[in-house]
Amino acid sequence: MIEERSLRAAAEHGLFTGVICGMWVLLPSLFILMNSEDDSLIALAADFLLIIVVYPALVCMACLVATSSSTNWKEISLISLVCSISSMLIMNLIIQMYILIYQGMNDITIGIEISTIFNLDLILNALFFGILASGIRICNKSLGITSENKEEEIKINYPPKPTHDPRIEQLHFEIKQSNLAILELRKEIWQMNK
Image (cartoon, rainbow, N blue to C red; front, side, top):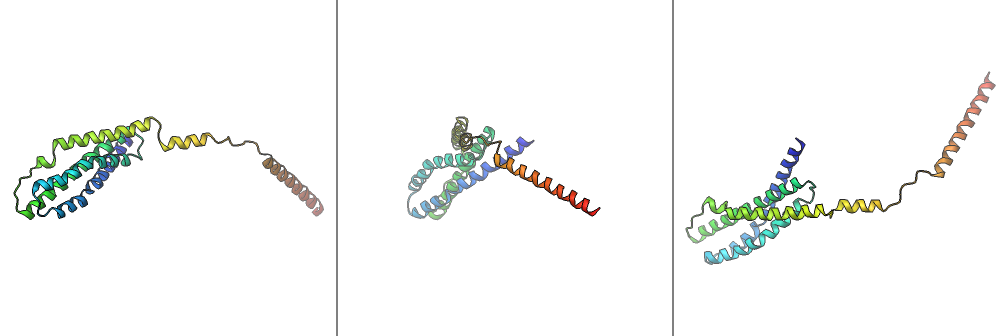
């Protein structure tokens, strides 16, 4: 039950990161669309090609960052796969939306189908990049390249804590002596009051 909750939270975390990564395409695509008002559709596609080529590197970085807090290999794999698939689908959806806007601005008619948004090649590429990012993260985790191991190594180098401190024993001895002196005074006061 606990593992199911953690996997669900991992899927939600991957989806959220993927959506944020996919939304990154909004601004560069808008810039491309604004600069290509009078260009042909082929020139627009060539401009979008630069984003499409560079975008998988951004997806891999987003997957690695999203999995940095996870230690379980199942969570790492799930976060990477969900993040990469969702970000690639959102990127494709945004680019298709901008192509539709471009068509409306220039009175061009091109049919866009659901299969262009949910492209099988795109999904397979996203799966590949998700597996690549999770593999990198899992291999680095299994090699022991984490901050937790570095902290443990630093703690190991410290000398052990002392179990015997003469100052503490001296204080205990002084407290016992003062308690004995107080008891003696009480006895004397009690005998005087009789």
